[in-house]
Length: 279
Image (cartoon, rainbow, N blue to C red; front, side, top):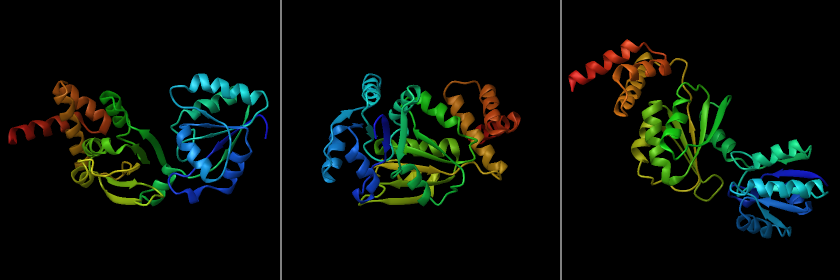
């Protein structure tokens, strides 16, 4: 087991999901790199595993990554874990894998629970093709840029979201994607596990108050090939109005929306003018 980095999946809630192989590997390595040693020590104690821990997270990944690599190169073996689920996915462990590749260090994965795949499996949406988009940025511009890049995405999309930001995200989903099917999966494998199969419109109305708590995964329907032109026009007009509100000239806003939604600019512009006259 020398000179190896093991990528070990751990439970995302229910400790009964810890695999015998994960227990065996964590018991056998020389040391464990953990996102939060306080969380990991509780897991290790539950399974009576006594191993040295080194903290490895976003803000120390460069310095600690070098230490971990040096120790592995000197003949030790290491297991990397995150607080819950599979490490190295939307996680600083991704950098450690790259460092191992650079130094020709063998990496072995010990699969475990994944909130992404688990939520997708119970979402009721298409599972044949999907994309994982992680967390949306708290920075407004980065957040909107991310959402806009997905407006024509046909695959099912999966997002992580914090409960205190859920309301704003649901509102943005309806504003930008229109009314699509959405599954809100929360507290996976925990006591209050829940799957809410709804739509972006209903969700933005019911849960904008951030009343849902716990770890949340959002599974959003991709753009349908047969999406009606009326619905597409509605979304394009809404998008154009947002751009105008942000200070863009109406003609320029309609032009940008036309490129995004693949609709004639004049159709969008005429609809906006008609709507304004009727108000």
